[in-house]
Length: 139
Image 1 (cartoon, one colour):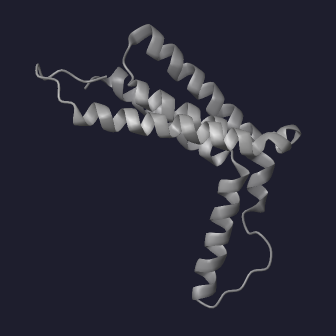
Image 2: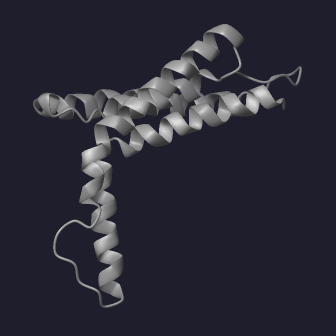
């Protein structure tokens, strides 16, 4: 695997991770898990220990959107990324839209993003299950 392919793969992974971090719901879940874990060892916290992350949700999501755009560009130009990865990252990015003005539409974005991400996972599984007889990559 060449250096360019590795860089493209890492960029796609970073896009997916940062889009997840852009979602307030994920941050809230992490905070609750942290509070639960700390309570097991006798430390109690009232409030949200990672609440400060909500102030950077929009910039992190914006970086994720930019990286996804770069990933799409590379996919169109070089044909070096699997469709399943792009679908999954796009779904995660849509589900993690952090804009307060869209708060009434969040369930819609969660559903649409979840369906797109699930489609990416299903496509990935289908690609892995169908073996190419010539030994070439299936993407």
